[in-house]
Image: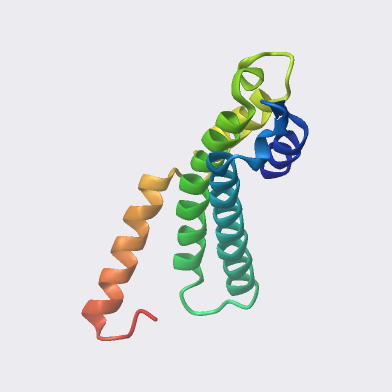
Amino acid sequence: MLELATEYAKDRVQFGVPIGSFQAVKHRCADMLVDVEGMRSATWYAAWAASTVEAGWELAASTAKVWGADASRRVMASGLQVHGGIGFTWEHDLHLYIKRAQFSQRDYGDAAYHRTVLATGLRALVEAGTGVM
């Protein structure tokens, strides 16, 4: 979605200039990049922690799931805003990515479930007197 939105912002011309030159569009794309990089980092850490059986890898996986579900919703919404009216049509593939993101948000438990897992796990660590970091 980030790639589609940035390419569209470069190509789409309004008032004689690419829409990517408008501050509001730049900010949307920058926020999308921050969310994508956050999702990537959380997922890579969770994958590493699980592969090495690092203590607390389950919490890392839940953190990645929560971050991914929430951030993907924001990225999809911003991508749709950058695309404007064309993003709402069946002729553009944007709807396929949005549907895929909506289904992925619920795979392996939704964000609310994983927030409960995180809260329970962190509370157990605090009550046991071990650090959470």
